[in-house]
Amino acid sequence: MKDSYVLVTGGTGFIGSFTALELLMNGYKVVVIDNLTNSSVESLNRIKKLANLKEDIPFFKVDFLDIDALENLFNSYKFYAVVHTAALKSVGESVQKPLLYYENNLCGTINLLKVMKTHNVKNIVFSSSATVYKQNLEGNRLVESDPLGCVNPYGRSKLFTENMITDVADSEPGWACVLLRYFNPTGAHPSGEMGEDPRKVPSNLVPYVSQVAVGKLEKVHVFGTDYNTTDGTGVRDYIHILDLAKAHVLALEKILVVSSSNKSSVFTYNLGTGTGYSVLQIINAMSESSGRKIPHVFDPRRKGDVDTVICNPSLAEKELGFKAKYGLKEMCDDLWKWQSCNPNGYQ
Ligand code: WQD
Image 1 (cartoon, helix red, strand yellow):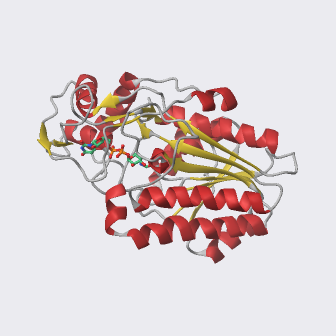
Image 2 (spheres, rainbow, N blue to C red; image 1 turned 60 degrees about the horizontal axis):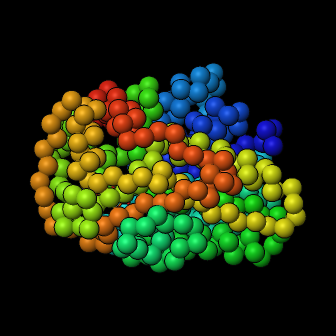
Image 3 (cartoon, rainbow, N blue to C red; image 1 turned 30 degrees about the horizontal axis):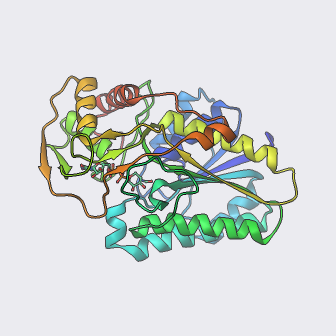
């Protein structure tokens, strides 16, 4: 296995770059593809520096809608597995442009699975999302067997992709698949050298708050104060990006164990901490970490949002040996170190 490569799709993006780094630190050989619509090749230099590599990381600007480009790539490298993080991921944008999301996230993955199948690469770790769950309003901790159901095209594209991967695995032997349902990834590398660096104004709370803290944006808009939560603002399960990246290595180790068996297998795990924080708690925590006041105003609820989304992380702990190590303070301290050293990102 170690003489072949792991392909990381979306590997210059936030999740993909940290996952590529963690794989490299654990002795894997990595190839990165990305279409660079929401990231920069600068990530590769950051990964190379943090992984203390002498050689450049093999990178190819590939859009997975271009099946020929994928085919050429698989003809050039022997892949052991694919970590598939590439996707469009804005909930709001997906409501405005559903066909863009279905074409990119679904057709792109169909191309990837086709080429994997042709080349007998049947190990995949897929970046799914907590959005696939029916948004239960009771705020109990979601488990993997909870009802699924999406309220936006982005979430549906993730759920459809889970189903596609499962159907392919069910159709023939030899597939080993791990579907990772991310809750709310955040934080940055503690060195301050690498972090989330979206090209557009962030739609997610934490990068938005950190850009207000550094003065790049004017004020935080708190979407809704009448939720059934401790302070009326939305509660989510934030997980440090370092923890999230580590889980991908554990997922590959799980694949290594099962891939020798002939029958196909699909495993699904929540990736979160099991602890929820409200919007106001996030603002206060970032204010603590940055030593800055963070101006904010109260706006109406954002369409599609619910009170509380937190996970029960015990299945990943039991079957992957994964347990989140970092808490909110580390997430905000590390994020501030990155943001304050790179106020305008490294675009
Ligand atoms: C968090 C909380 C908002 C922005 C989404 C996707 C999910 C995953 C993570 C990709 C909510 C509030 C937000 C702002 C605010 N993405 N908020 N002001 O919606 O939980 O999850 O991103 O995989 O799949 O669904 O994350 O950061 O957008 O919102 O008040 O400017 O912050 O109402 O309560 P969300 P978020």
